[in-house]
Image (cartoon, rainbow, N blue to C red):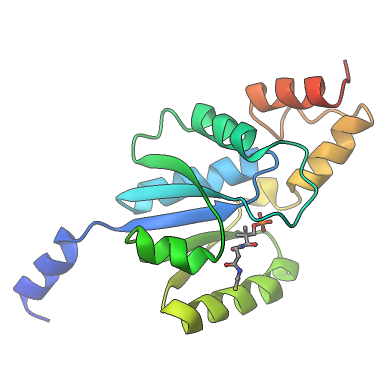
Length: 171
Ligand code: PNS
C-alpha cells in the first residue's frame, strides 16, 4: 500500500454507532462508549425507538440521561433511530456499528445481527469485549434489583440511580 492510500484512509472520518435500548444506560454501556470514543473520530450513541419493548423510560428520557453522562466525551453524540439500524447508518455516513460482548451467550444473537446488517447494507460490526467488572450487567437486572430495594449504586451513574429510584418509588 502506498503512502497516498494510507493518508487517504487517515483523512476519512471514522464515525461509528453504538446502538441500544439504554433503558437505562449502565456503567457497562458507558465503558464501551468511552472505549469506542478513544478508538474512533466520532461516536453516535443511538437509542432504538421502534415500539417493541416495554421500557421503563421514554426514548426522550433515555436520550437525556445518555447526553448528561457523556458530556465529557467531546466526540460522542446521542440520537435516536426508527426502522432499520443500517438505514440510519447509511443516512449518517456511519461505517460501523460497535457492540459490547459480555459473554458467549451474547455472541450468537449479536453474530446473527452483525451478519444480517452486513448482508443488508455492508455495514460492519465491531465487537468490544466487556470489561469483566461489568460482564454480568444488564439494564433489565438493574431495574429488577432496584425495584426490590437492592443496591445498584455501583452499576449505574449517579443521575441514573436517582431517576431509577424516583421512577420505581424506592428510597
Ligand atoms: O440494547 P438492545 O435491546 O440489545 O438493542 C437492540 C437494537 C436496538 C440495537 C436492535 O434491536 C436493533 O438494531 N434494532 C433496529 C431494527 C433493525 O435494524 N433490525 C434488524 C437487525 S439485523
